[in-house]
Length: 30
Image (cartoon, rainbow, N blue to C red; front, top):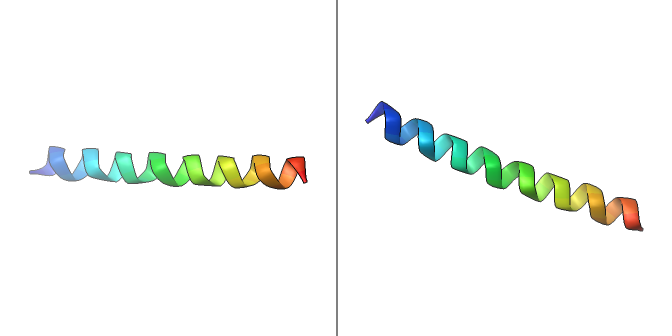
């Protein structure tokens, strides 16, 4: 169960970082 929660947390964190990177790139281009 702990492994499942950890993998889910990592997936959510990865998606959050991807969104942040995309926002930074968008602001950088503008």
